[in-house]
Length: 492
Image (tube, rainbow, N blue to C red):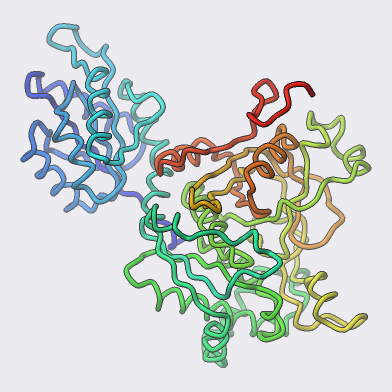
């Protein structure tokens, strides 16, 4: 996944000059020893502003892109917070707990110092990441550092991200439209293009000498049973190369790229296939391609890819589970109610590695009904990757800019059940505790669109911290029944 940042972490200890500097150094060394991972230990312990400049220069020279600022004692408020201003990357602030020495010469008062650190960060309008409980022993802080890595990866990625779009949002899917003001607020760049630009670039890749190798890779990925239309592979390989080349040629000052493409109704007829399988392949490499020009869907997917360091997908919160299927396959086998379950679907953009073994390239049934003659064999509506999505823990989430230009988000952890859907597309039976209430009092009440990003695992904690880091005030989640939503009728 070369579209996902690699975090190189450094640690800088700080010390208030009226406390023993040896206390901060000794405690910093203990953290590095306790941490089970790579971390650069800055030799400069910061007591003043000149130390701060030396320390930042040192970690920058070592190519660190994320930092831990460690208050080994009370800490110098101004120099320690200025590290967050001078260093070009996410910075976590943590503090030492007492207990590794006497409480006279060995007392550091970092518990107190963290309060002033937080106050000074706010006074200077600086962003620093402070864990849920930021004071701890060496082992405690080593665990905080482990938790910080995926958060830092997402922050670095978003800071260096460009979203490339092709085409306006489809008219009947206006819900995917949203103000792009919120993108600039968190540092994301955007490049908007027309479908015609993409078609011109695609035609320029005809007979590209790399096409046979991509076709071979596709055939190997699909296997004999999944490669229903081998004659389609050259077209899809040509499109994959078009997108990858466009990404390289249009990065500009950014390191990472995601796409949000208009995939219907004009696309299949003009390009000769559906783009879904190609989209799935790029998503498996950490390059999400959001359907229906869903810009915030693409951004959400990318954040999920950075946090999970794994493939993600974008799905419709699509249809209810029939009561008959629930009674036969779910009720009594799990604790989920019928209203906790739903089916999430998209035409065929979910990576092959997240689907059941019988997945295959097929055709888009809905588009075939709409665009091709009734009763005809599918032609240009072929190109979806279809099958049931494999059972897995999941996190369903979205970062969205509402109609007023405010960023908001939701996060819900759950799972994909090992239940055959008996349906078409890339689809799965999802279960999220208290989904019915979440659906009504978050998704409907707060006017979210039907698309949600899916990370394959439970990543709610890290996502929550990332959204909190960006100052998002409204972070909704699937609240337990004992905690009613503000709009929930207490008399039900």
